[in-house]
Length: 241
Ligand SMILES: C[S@@+](CC[C@H](N)C(=O)[O-])C[C@H]1O[C@@H](n2cnc3c(N)ncnc32)[C@H](O)[C@@H]1O
Figure 1: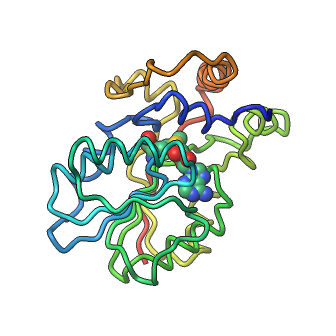
Figure 2: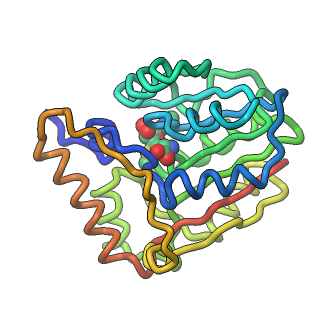
């Protein structure tokens, strides 16, 4: 059997809030946006659906959630049903979104794009965004160019192509057709920890049987955070057309 990916491990253990800052950071970002009963919101790469469920419970908008991983979709479906939340849930890729042009006012992407072909994903996000819409993307970002060996380690642990610097993310957003790109928040792994922004809401499902390969993957992730914490971090990019 193939070795599990980082995302397989997150899905297996049902890790919620699998992005820096967890649900607290998401809440903070949402407070600054105008969200009404006519707002169409997309949670792209929704994982277990924690963010989507929070939004549906606290805002009057329509929520659509999509993820590529069947286990994530299963977990999100169980959550939405258990909490009786009318959220439209689809299995699919952010690289080829099954929505017409101009469908959404707000698109949230929390630690997802880095796992995809970002040029394809960004052009899809732009396509499905309404002309006055906003993309909020919370993505891993390096503080400097990584050496080939460092990029190699990141590739091995996360199965990603490479980690982008802030400048590379902004350029990619601009090249995809976003004209206004702001950085809403900026942290390294360590500065994030010192700022006491640890995700209290991160949860895991311990009812599944233990799987050492999955656990090793999660340990590799923890190890990266501690060894690369000075020069790996994240940004929140707010992009509009
Ligand atoms: C680090 S998790 C973040 C999940 C969720 N946004 C959160 O913050 O808890 C990354 C998620 O991106 C999803 N993903 C990866 N590639 C994707 C793609 N091409 N299209 C849609 N979702 C994708 C994974 O299945 C996983 O659920």
